[in-house]
Image: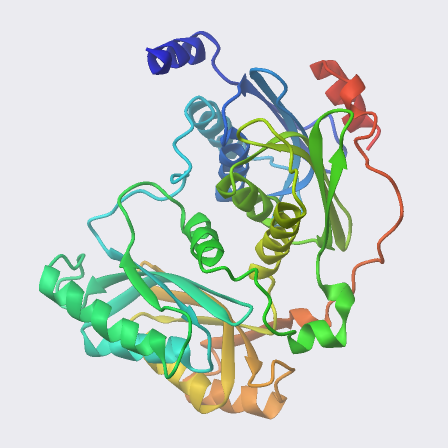
Length: 442
């Protein structure tokens, strides 16, 4: 009965979405008002992410039963949203999706497909691991059509979509799937690994790939930092700075993060907070030319703030890991080629033979074209000799493999300041008009 009552209330109070190109000089302003429910903030942010928008500023409030947020967004080219069809699509997605929030195990963006089999992998990272996985899949007549691979703190996780290379359809034969699982687990396990290697089929549902990768990494406890990486030793300023403090007068825990700005940063932080069953009641996001500052007033789903030092440390380390997982360490290489069975196996084998480590990868196939992105370093995690890159390009094809940039050479974010919370006066503002006033002064 409670469920039916909630549905009735949501039908009587549908979400209200306003998209305004005049309120801000350099961004499109999106205002979302709706009935509040745990997980709705993550859902709205993921819709904006799925529409290829970058959030430059945000103001969040979800007191009581109502959710009121303001987002300043731009396209990846740095422009306002001018296309009316795109504006209409964003409005429709937000109005529909904000009216229904699935369980914690679900998210928007990916639907179950009969066109491919989705495989999830996790294990200890090592040089050449992706190459070995791709070789096994090629030997088993599996074609990789899409994949996302993350590595962090000596751990690796991947969500891989494969098809049968003969039919081009999903693989459903239980015996064949068991063989794939056994062989991939052998590869992931390596020699003498202490942590368990896992290969599973993605569960039915609508969980997005990015969300699943965060969940896999979190379950694998990649936030437990065993050793310092070379990048950390060379420059501590490159690591995100996270604080977890008390706001006892309002019975909240205050989370602040300072890190290098990048797309999808807010989504990554909210994924972890939501999966750890924390609720954001108030918050703000402010990004600059290099640095991003996020501030959230949170409580656990049971209504209580963080009370123990152990939980405080766990949240801090989990948020650091959430920010770092998508950091693009290394040289960015883009491959564009006619797709064929075994292509990914051949490319990753060439990388391995030239002593390159793949730190992160985005594999996609569209209309018969493979469009892949790799972030690579040498075995020590440092810059790669240009002669090695030129040799690899000659082996693969100069036109097919392009060198983009080395993210390790980008600017260091400004040093931390001692300024207080940006939302210190926020609780005095309760109306939506106050939101607009706050935005106009930012």
